[in-house]
Amino acid sequence: MSTTRKASAVAAIASLGAATALLTGGGASAATTTPGCAPVGSVEAIIDDSGSMSATDPNELRRAGLELFISSTANAKKTLGAVEFGSAPAETVFAPALIGPNVKPMIAALQAKIQADNGGTDYDSGFQKAKGDNPGAQARIFLTDGANNGDFFNSHLPGPKTYVVGLGIGPASPTDADATRLQQIATDTGGRYFPSVDAAKLQPTFNQITSAVSCLQAPRSFTSRLFTKKGQTSTAAAGLGKSTKKVELVLNWAQPTNKFSLSSVQALGRKNKVLASLTGKGKPKKLSFKQTSGTTFQSLSVKKPKGTRKLRFKVKAGQVLMPESTVSQLTQR
Image (cartoon, rainbow, N blue to C red; front, side, top):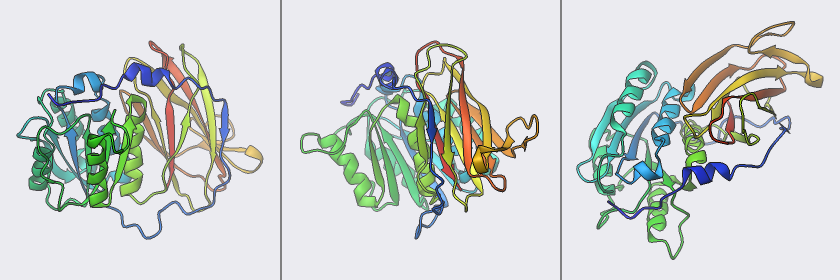
């Protein structure tokens, strides 16, 4: 088993104790896409499933994060493949395929294969398998919680832009060769390194990667109050740009024994007039939306009604067995 940073999921969750009431975003009018960026059509995920993951990621949030990536409507027309690695040889989780018609089998394959049962940590085997499975990939997602076993032969090269997720591994520094290597993988490929990712940040990080490969502006994040019991709520609001047509609203939490939901979503017009809501009860019309959910996330793709200036939403606790704050992310399309 490799040298690892044993991140404590419980400590990470407890650290999010700062309560928030109503967070109001300005009336942003900037474009929702990144200028000069070409959306990626094919992605390959390389997921560390070494034995140390049983301690670093006991709730398998790395799997849930990839499920969130698969469930996003922004990725429906992308091709995705996935491999898991530990000790050599790495194995295919699912072969590259169009996400849209294959959401369920992809998620089923992840649930069957990601079990922290692959021994040590061999980066080379993961990258080599990814190259063989999906040589045409335009981007890669590489997630690990530990140092590479033995020598690393730069098997990420030549390679496409790589988004590196350091689970419990800090930023590059002269005193941390492992973090510096992960930063180098991202730098060599023109990608990005996400350091110091803990349980609370893991799913939101995958959502940030969705925005990056889809050339969308980075999502706005809202951290809720610290939920301690059933029935508590936390409300937030964000301004929407004039060019926005759809909004991706994702609610994330880290403890699978807890249950949260987006209990209310409202499109607001001038003077905060409610134009539409999830239920459509009363005078406001019903929002047009598509919903997907997992054990630790709920995602809504909402069509923006004409005249909408803000989106206001409420998070409600359905079950709280461990105190936790949630992270909601809003992406404009």
